[in-house]
Image (cartoon, rainbow, N blue to C red; front, top):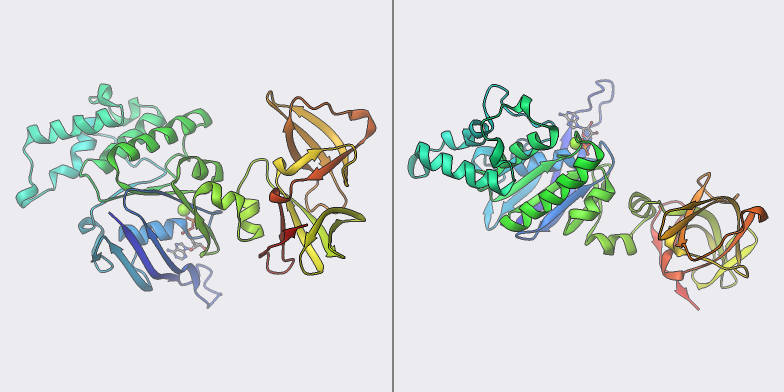
Length: 366
Ligand code: ADP
Ligand code: MG
């Protein structure tokens, strides 16, 4: 089922009563989620992710704008008539019911032509339990399950009515690191097998990048960029998006363009064609080339061995962060005793940003 958000806006009265202006949690969202895709809604805490999800589910009414499922305008429909499955961070299972009873629960309220017999319900619950791989736990109570298992039950319960759209709000946040990795792979598999259009909310860029067909990056209720994870990583529209994606993070230096060169401090680090002026320079960790004759000199702090790669920890007086990491192949040798390290830069991994607005400034390499 295709989902379209049309000029969708949600304002709340400020929680701080002294502030009279509304909070714009979602500011004029306009995008389409193609049928069968998994979309990652990504942004820092408070940027409006849950609000967006709750507008799609119908738990919240928009201040203005429309929500369309397929060809139907569902803006006025209550959640129970939208055909959505919801999963939240806290699993919200019924503690006194078994796994089977928890999964069956949404089916018991079906009426009319959708009404199911007890046998049909049990068969359906088992089918979904198999899909999320908890069919061996059907008679347990939630308290007898691990966090990962509880979250699978919650996912099964959201799927049992075969929703048109599956909505997941930070579903992995309560799990430990290993389970998070495992469960996110599971969610991806389940989504692929069912083909249900899915919106996955997270503040974790790594999580969003790894499982989404497309990511939507948000900040302060405003959509920043939408695209395939690799596209958004390679071609960020602004400094916020560039800094939000990637581990280790992009490094940012104060620089300037003059006389056809990009300067950081006194060093001309690239030959570029761009308007003269002060800029912020972003360099991805994989954008540094170890080069003893390179134009860019940094203070060398440490070399971290990571197996296939090494991470060079360096600093620079024009850097906006105390240290930066560059990732290079472990075949390289770095002499720690010298105290400095020289790089040349990959133009495709170097970005210029407007110092005031943060917008990306395109440049040509000469
Ligand atoms: P996220 O899920 O990205 O952390 P939310 O969608 O929960 O963000 O919140 C977005 C903004 O809207 C925040 O500034 C939050 O304080 C505000 N907000 C959310 N719900 C309400 C509400 N019911 N009343 C007032 N403000 C709210
Ligand atoms: Mg939230």
